[in-house]
Image (cartoon, rainbow, N blue to C red):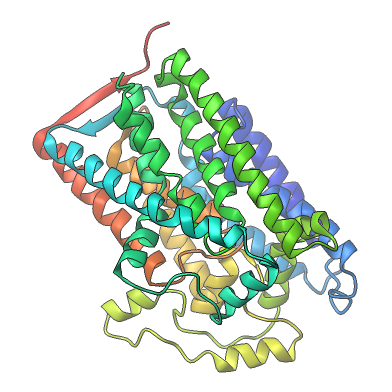
Length: 419
């Protein structure tokens, strides 16, 4: 029963925000649709893997509370993003002066380094025999294609910020700067694709395409028609190459039932959240936020053996998908997760609603942070490690710095060109 309520409410929300924005390809609509279709896919996931879920009745009353809790938590965390009306934006502002330009150049150089660093590693990874075993060995730490070093750390960290060079490139095109620098910024953002491929991962290309579609829709009316046609060609090319590699990995890792694996990959988050939420679990006291723990003087590592043992007793494990909400519940408990969601909504809903017709670069950075966490969070909280925690902190620091810079030096305003 609970699953049908979740699907119904998400469908109503999706239809409402789609009717307001008039396009499927806006970030808020895309994120809501991602969770809607994920829950729909869970129906097939449960049906196709009956042996795995034989002890759980998702259509009865047993998991009703956990299903409604999933819906309530998801709506609270989605509220800030959904409250932002992309269709009302009339102007984009960026800070004046050399600091923004210097930031763009630095980001370009770092992103190009990341791209050049990961391309050969990704090529080696995708041409190895038995990709499935390689992926499993990498996941358990028993195999590495490259040793940990400063270059690997810088390249991997930079790749995680792929949305920023992508956004700056699109802003440059909106400003009429249709030059090599702008195309290079866009190209450099693909470092994230190769970063994920280098670990034989599949979702890098998916999230890059997802981000590009969302950001392009955000800036499309500001960009000349000719450039938009070029973007269509770029999108088709990257989609063909990237999705071919994705299928290669999928057929290699799940050769017995590749399409079933894709459906399971997308549909397992909802039932696994419900299973975990229904268990009386010990709280792992912020395990997914090691850098934040370190900042406030706590040890980075957390002994979560009690949590793992409890999950094992109930026939499940911690590392299967359950959306970012499952990670939060493990880290902060049920009450803590509700409180964090409420506080975030109270702080950021008014922020995104204010000055709705003007999108400043600082607000765009906060928006990108929400978009990345929520879109990638359909599987799990991707920012659970030190690099992910650092990404959150850097996004917030950059948003504050560029806000102050705009106040001090003024802003350049970009308007929708007249037809």
